[in-house]
Amino acid sequence: MTDDVQILEAVERYIRGEMDTPEKEYFEQLRTSNPEIDQLVVEHSIFLQQISQFGERKNLKSLLNETHANLVNSGQIREEAPKVKVIQLVNKYKRVLAMAASIAGLTALAISGLVTYFTPKSNPSEIAQLKKELNAVKISQKQTQKEISTFKNAPTRPATPGKFGGTGFLIDGKGYLVTSAHVVAKADSIYIVNTKGEYYKAKTLHVNDHTDIAILKIIDKRFEPISRLPYGIRKVRAELGEQIFTLGFPRTEIVYNEGYLSAKTGFNGDTISYQIAISANPGNSGGPIFNHSGEVIGVLSGKQLTAEGVVFSSQSKNIFKALEVIREDSTAGTIRVNSQSSVKGIDRVQQIKKIEECIYNVMSY
Image 1 (cartoon, one colour):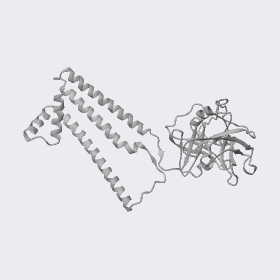
Image 2 (tube, helix red, strand yellow):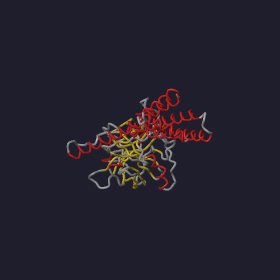
Image 3 (cartoon, helix red, strand yellow):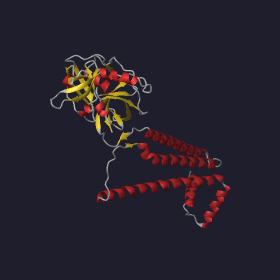
Image 4 (cartoon, one colour):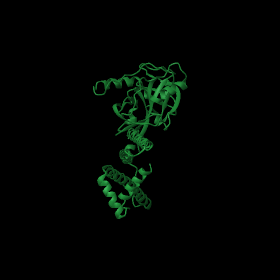
């Protein structure tokens, strides 16, 4: 192992120009007569160059950040938040990760060259140690590649809050959701966030301002479909006085509320909506209204500003009407709605635990 270190030290001294004339001439003759040494010099030169470039980039970035901060502090430039921006961690770190992978690969080649060079005259213990180090580098390479893959698959998230926020819920585990039409009205882009804080890109398939129903589709490859939803969508009308509850995002954390159906019609006798007695805020718009069996009977729409505690919801039958329109479009795909609730008969806490993973915060941009 001492010879190995000496060889590497000699290579570095030669590359850095630290050898005197006789030593340099001898080493160059050694390079000419020994291809392995020559290859090691080339590989190590590239390795050191990569390290140097990495340091230069890091220093330049630091200088630019410092200059930018000074200009902002002195008032010479103004820093404004971007209107719409999606930050991908892989774009931010891909140069550093690529550099790490390159360094690991070059290190592996260098150690491999040493193994080849010293095999004829080294004892078995030295060869075994070199092979062990080579294997360690290969493992490091695999780990680096795994980290790069992780960054590529990292959740994308908006850099700024949405113009309007609301709630949505799955009606098909393949990624089809329902929310209120006014939540996504005139949106250029839509993101949904689950209770774990994971962001997914979505698009609108159908919007009906009259019924205040919108159907969304998750278009993010990272989304993992849910085989079966725990709740069903009810087709028939709900009954006056039925106990109800809702889950939604009036804040960044999911919030539970409960109440009852106070009228079978909505504002001014509107027959496509209900009046419900429940606490609601703007972020609750688009949230599901469940009965005690865990069946969706409506979609929370809004509240009457002139009357305290008067809240309305679009009836669940409007979801099925929207799906009929979507089915006429052959490119939309097949949407299968579950009508049976698997949380019927269990206590409310357990119902919520099974349901909440299907409820999303909807952010419109």
